[in-house]
Length: 304
Image 1 (tube, rainbow, N blue to C red):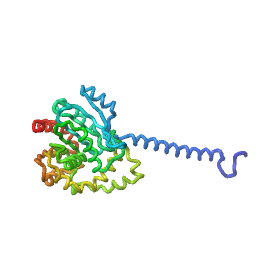
Image 2: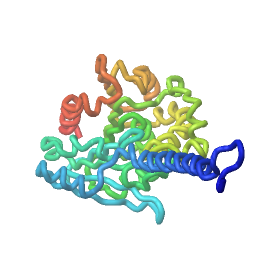
Image 3: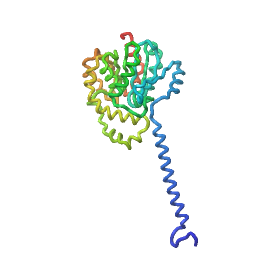
Image 4: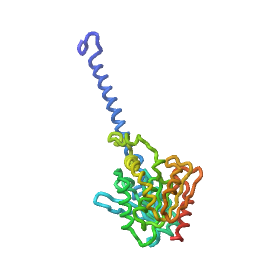
């Protein structure tokens, strides 16, 4: 019969089976590709400028959003509230993260009355060349240049959380008179306690790195650099001459509580060191201990 071969299925049926297999395979590939594209859009940990303006406006807070051009290809995006002629608090987020990590501080009326409040997107995060991280030393240079360009003649306080902790220490060490006070929140400063995380090198491979979503990619990149940079921290800490406050939770699962003791041991030239232990608190003290940190910042104000 036409279309038949003795002892075999009809050719048309065979072709339909093959086509269906290809269609299913193509369908699975397209679904996987679509999911990967969506995955790439996740975990950016940032708020767009229009969204930030709306959110602050709903709380009747005047928000300024600007960019500092470090070079033709590198910029620092930042949020600002508060009193322009007052001492400045610079908030430096961890990894991953962005300037919106400190929204609650920038929106607080008591802090706004006493300070000029500035929260930055570190290089590679938020809207500071998102996705392209920089070496820690260059980040310090960039943030330092921004702060010097933004001087209003008033005292400066650094507040750094997590990876922002060693960065604010490095800035204070590099520029002795840049900040009067350094506040380290759950800061990672000890080479001995820094997790080895050998898997990060594998993830940093070009193939695996491409699959990382959003801010997780620059986060992994800068942490690979930090694994080497952290061995400079003893010298960095010894170079700090400002007043230092160190706050840490005893149940921190990302940055061990022992980092506090390590910092105290190596801050040999700080004008003073004060520590605050949060019993049974984890790594996220900027949010869980907002009131305590706010009170500390208000306590510091009359001493400036």
